[in-house]
Image 1 (cartoon, rainbow over the protein chains, first blue to last red):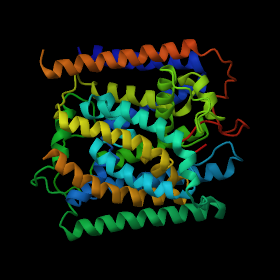
Image 2 (image 1 turned 30 degrees about the vertical axis):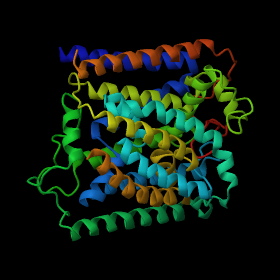
Image 3 (image 1 turned 45 degrees about the vertical axis):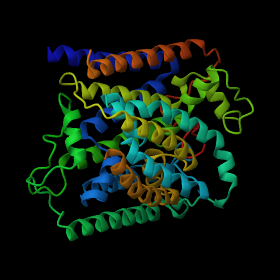
Image 4 (image 1 turned 60 degrees about the horizontal axis):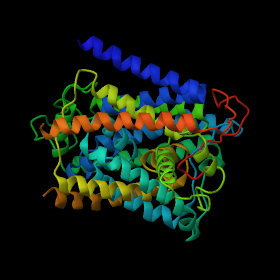
Length: 396
Length: 55
């Protein structure tokens, strides 16, 4: 009966893409299809930004960071020449270096460890059936709406203008991006070697995260052969294959949408639509009440670029997690779920202070050669160190 | 019914409700929208979608 299940999942995805195309146009349909691919790859590779950082912070396992740096380099190499030569048809993720960026990225980094997922992680894990991400999703959307509403006031607090390295030409911008990513990867590898983690030992006990993920993996589609890396592996296949596929999808998204892949804006639109439906008047709102955002609340959700990619991503994760049958999961404690829901609220709000999450600001910013992406990375990583400590206390 | 079954039923109901709300939102949006070209690259139009970076 597995073939019937798979046929049902594929048919459901294609029907969804067709429905989006009919309702909102061919571009939106293509973006829904790309969203499904994003979700399937994220779930199939278990490509977690949050987990990758936590593995390094707790165990000095550098593989997640290496994969993220590989993704940044590939995405930048594929897209910077296109953006530079597109004459404005394609734009990068460029944002100012404000005080809100510093505060927001730090808060986001801490909260994402408690929520056990960043922007993309929350969506794909919620689709895959993780109870924790499931409770995070609504609070994340409300936080994102509220954060966007307050974003103009946060920007007023002050800061520096945006620094777009593309102004120096794409070869220079790419060279700086590659050098910076290489430096981070080298530092991560050096730290791992110092603690004897340069090569993964299959006999070593798996991290709590790996054990938890193993449980969620039951019955799911994956190109991950086993939860633990093969003995002697320096860079597990799931990481580099995930980075490669995500970079190609990132390129396709930019070419189709004209802008980099994003997550949080769409979730803010969902939150704004929800509160408006409940009677909250947003006509005088500093963000949602002005163009072009006000128009996005009038248009259907399916007409919004990030919303439609997010919806596709969730479906892709649902399909991938049920490819081989029903997915298993573990139910966290009520205390853990409550902490995750609060963390979701903080994540949504802080992501708008910081001009995006791990996808819109970290991946999009760095791959677009915008310095704000590097500031986001540094502050969110520092926040994650704090977040991992808080998480230990909540788990205890 | 054990907790896992309750969660599975809740999970399915949540996504079905989300799908219904999405359909309702699409059906009730009466605004006329100019459909953008299928591919932004080569369209001759400036990018105009909302993005987290502030646009």
